[in-house]
Amino acid sequence: MAAAPAEPATEGRFAWLRPPKGGPGGTMSIWDHLRELRYRVTISAIAIVLGALVSIIFYRWLVDLIMAPWNRARTALVEARPGASLMVVNNGVTSSFTFAVVLCVVAGLILSTPIWVYQLWAFVAPGLLVKEKKYAMGFIGAATPLFLAGCALGYYIWPKGIEVLLSFTPQDMGITNMQDMAEFLKMEIQIILVFGLSFLLPVVVVALNMAGVIRGYQLKRARKFVVFGSVVLAAVATPTTDPFSMLSLAVPVSGMFMLAELICRISDKRKGITEETAAEYAIDLDDGK
Image (cartoon, rainbow, N blue to C red):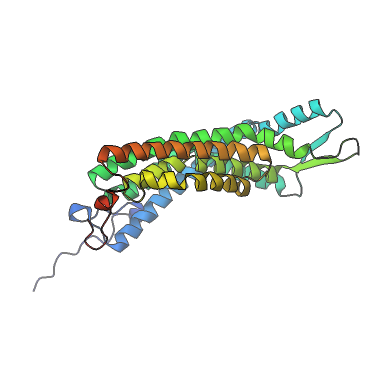
């Protein structure tokens, strides 16, 4: 019996980097899904590394951008308290290197956002229906400007938070405030991300409403708890713990929740969903309808 022709053992040295094509209808085995995940993560990591390398060219400009909130806070504090002594330092031999690496990686992450967001979308999209893809694209389109707006607000109010905290230093006692650059960068990134992610609340709420998980009348009942929770979140999440930063986060988050509640109630009203008729639209987990 003649032997069957052998299939090519490999498509090339870097064939493992290519995403699997999948079977009929886009079906994939678990191994194929893992191969695709490896491909998406690899491409995203390469994009982030390349973005970090490119950011080295603009390193001094990035340092000026990062330290701008400190400089604004220092100027305002010195004008209000002429005797204040403020200083930015690098503690230890490796502090400057750590600061540079973290700053360039964060910059690379931002520069490569379109690439890794697309890789995330390309990994999830095959499992979505046409209608779900339309909604998902709408959510991505709404989430991006909200996230950037939150980051911008965090960057804007950060100098005021620094000023409030440093104002507690006793005046005319020879005390110098020394701020480590690496620690300052960590706090700045944290507060910017906290504000950015918090601004995604209305997108999440509306998405859950469209999925039938929550309803507008339920959001109305939970309003006071959400407002209280926003204050608690702001107190826990903001690294500065000053009242100005807390209110700057809690007030917008509460306002955006109320806006999301309004959108959900209008959507439910158009569908004829009320507290009395909500049971008719509930998801039956037994039959999947």
